[in-house]
Image (cartoon, rainbow, N blue to C red; front, side):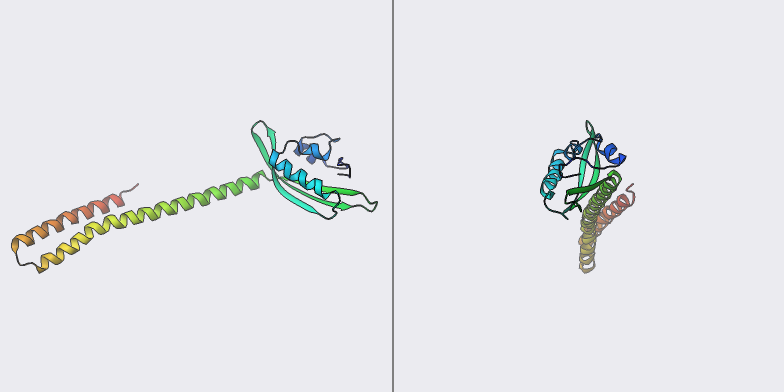
Length: 178
C-alpha cells in the first residue's frame, strides 16, 4: 500500500481472502472485518504513516456470510522506499484450522478439569460413605471384645452385622457403576 493507502501490488489470494477488487484502497480491504478488529487494524495503519519500521500483527475475524467468519492472521510493516515513499507491506493468512485446534485443546482441558473435579468429589464422597460403617464396625468390635454382658455382646454383634451389610452393599454399588 502506498502513501495514499492505495493498493500498489497484491496477489490474487489477497483479493479472494478479503473479497475486494484490484482497485481497492487499504481501508476498504478491511470492510468485512468485525468492527472491533477493524478498529484495531485501522488504528495501527493510521499510526504507521510516518513511522518507518513499525510492525503490527493480529488475529482478526472477517465476516464472509451473514453469521460466518474466517479467522485471519494479519501482519504489516511500514518502511520508506529509496525514493522516499512511505509504504506498508502486509500479509494475511487464514488461520481457521489453527483457531479450531486451539478451541479443541481448550475444550479438552476444560473437560479434563471438570473430570478431575468430579473424580475428586466422588472419591471424597465415597471415602465418607465407606468410613461411616467401617468406623461403626471397628468401634462396636472394640466394645464387643471388652464387654462381659451377653446381652450387650449380642447387641454389639447385631450392630456390627448391620454395618457390615451396609458396607458390602456400598462397595457392591460402587463396583457396579457403569
